[in-house]
Length: 336
Image (tube, rainbow, N blue to C red):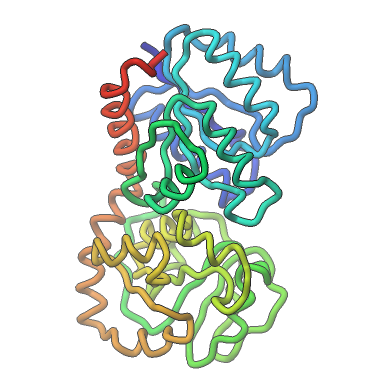
């Protein structure tokens, strides 16, 4: 039985969305001998019939296909692809990266659930996401992701140094990261594409780097995971309860100590694994940093080191595949 994994066009540059998908495909193809199928993700195509027909011809009947969701094409294109694959008795598993309706995007929750119900099995980032989706009509068997997305890098394995700086990397649009402008008594170092707000001294904007170079820059201090001000109605903040922020994967690959909202999915995982710090409010950040001395920092790093090696070597996607195999074995009647 063949195993396939959908992947994105590697020439695309939307790192926060493209990299986790290409990393998953690379890990599964290189380590588990999956065949990669390049799907036109992140592209709207009204004439998708010929594209889907061509792709489906490459798939063997009665095989297994891992579908990385969402693809940011259109639900019409994805549904057409899924229906054609099912006609060849192909079992389709959705690896769910994001649920866009919960992020405040144009899709509604009902639309997301209707789409996900077309798959045979799906993986979800958290129990909170599973509970919400099932409460609203999801009926597909699910696997809950055990930990963050993996992060492949060719950069050397860092052993970060203690420092009282707080790194923040990723999307630094005002909608997601504008709260950084209000932070006082914190030494922030901010990385990302452009910045349209002013930071308080001694914080500063350090520029944009590709992933491998950025990891070498993240060689000391902490890594902050926070999206939007708690007092706002910004959906990005609420979404933290359900997803795996890709910043976590970056910070773990670099080896620095993550700091997250205690109520977030990441925060709950950090508390469970003891490989990071949690705060209840962003205003708690300065005092949290003061409580961590060099000895405490190095103790935390000993826990983080295990995760640093795991995300660099594909541990979590291989765990997903193993868990999906177990789920399929107990639901043999659903396997095509």
